[in-house]
Image (cartoon, rainbow, N blue to C red; front, side, top):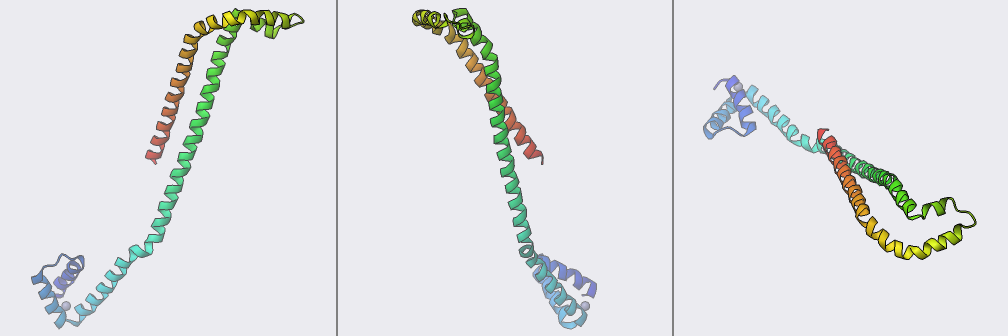
Length: 177
Ligand SMILES: [Zn+2]
């Protein structure tokens, strides 16, 4: 075996891919060749150092993982805050949309004018309205129930949809990083 071959065998042995025959030949050469023996000792020392390296690097890796986890948590918190704000915004918007409808209905039943343009007669008027309100109320509920239910449902659906879109967007943003 030549020194050059021996050197290759050393690398193969350190990688753990050497077979018995090659190993025996290498040992035979090492026993005869001082230069290769020195090189083999250096290579072993280097290999030992390299296999210890992951332990040296591990604190760095742990720190990177912790940072990544903190960032994920931060993103999750932002997503929750954003989702909540979006929900509140949607609810506010729904209320704004519902308000004219409600006002229209109150106006139609004669309650709103009294509430808004209330004068001295307002109270008696209101009481008179109140008397009728019992009957009106039942009818009103009947008339209002369906539109209100539909509006509530629309609000709920849009809120859930926007929330879902928001969370999906946040997920995609997180995945793209
Ligand atoms: Zn040699």
